[in-house]
Image (spheres, rainbow, N blue to C red):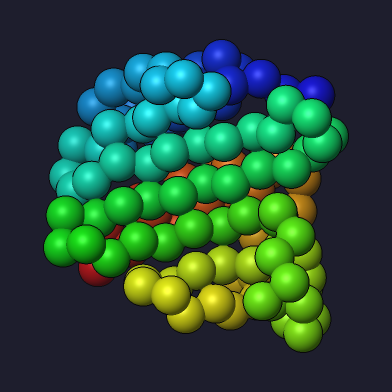
Amino acid sequence: MITLQEIARIAEIEFSGLVESTEYIGFKLRIVIKQDGFIDVWLSRKIKDKFSYHWEVGDGSFYRYDNFPDSNWKDLETFPFHFHDGYFDNIGVPPGFSKDVEGGFRDFMDWVNNKLRV
């Protein structure tokens, strides 16, 4: 199982153009983005392979990809995987997003990077 330290290393090395710094806050990893906002990474300490990647933007909007079972989204085809797009809208997992912890993190970081380029 991947650790927050390994996630931080991926962020700092593979996404060095996007990432300003990383720090640990309690049981989560905070990734400060050079351009706008931060990404918080939570990995469940009790349930294997449960994750949440949350990008909070300066305008108050946020984007999150996670697989914590939320009964509000049980009707999504991709349940328990879901994506918060903007404020509270939930959509199924964007096409091409991996459902494993490490691959999902890389896909989310790529998505953030592409969104900032637009």
